[in-house]
Amino acid sequence: MTPKTPSESVTVMTDMVLPGETNPLNNLFGGELLARMDRAASITARRHSRRVCVTASVNHVAFNNAIPLGSVVTVEAKVSRAFRTSMEIFLDVWIEDRESGNRLKANEGIYTFVAVDEMGKPVEIPQITPETELEKQRYEAALRRKQLSLVLSGKMKPADATELKALFAGS
Ligand SMILES: CC(C)(COP(=O)(O)OP(=O)(O)OC[C@H]1O[C@@H](n2cnc3c(N)ncnc32)[C@H](O)[C@@H]1OP(=O)(O)O)[C@@H](O)C(=O)NCCC(=O)NCCS
Image (cartoon, rainbow, N blue to C red; front, side):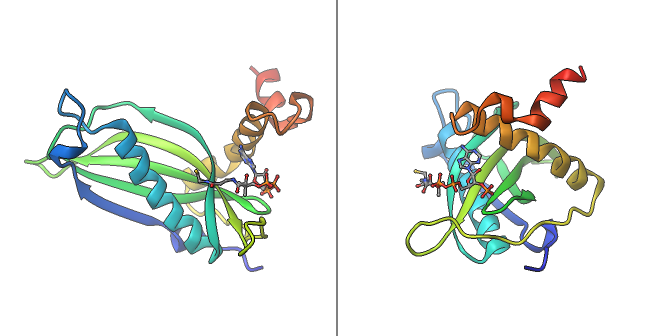
């Protein structure tokens, strides 16, 4: 399979925060943001693999900044690394200042998707070739994150997580 670049499958979704989507503090409800991230990641996974893709795990989400009612929110989803049948999707969430138009990084998340056939069986996907410096950094770290996610879900023995262990041994 021919490798692809992250820019070939990037998804950028921009939408407003409406009253029904907020918590009692009038900020975007966390679950609503997770759903938007899941949708954007799902589109990216599908564009990369040209297969039906399912969310296998949500590895990390950082709610660093509250997103007020009326905000213009942009979710950008990119494949940071493809493995055999799974891929890590990195999500950056931005909000736009109403007056200046400047973008502020509000949140980020890392999801894992698996490409499946009609029977729900995992299928092979193209590899990814990172291009920018950030894409290369995220690509490098993705294997450790995959191992951590597998260890936490009981699918890998900590002793087998070689790259993850090396990170701690080096600190
Ligand atoms: C995700 C799913 C397809 C994995 O099926 P499986 O039988 O466990 O298949 P495998 O063990 O071969 O795993 C497939 C890939 O997913 C990866 N994977 C599985 N669980 C993972 C986890 N928790 N974190 C990271 N990667 C994971 C495996 O490492 C493997 O990756 P690779 O082939 O790229 O090396 C299956 O569990 C499933 O269908 N889950 C439900 C998905 C769903 O409905 N999501 C919507 C949310 S409700």
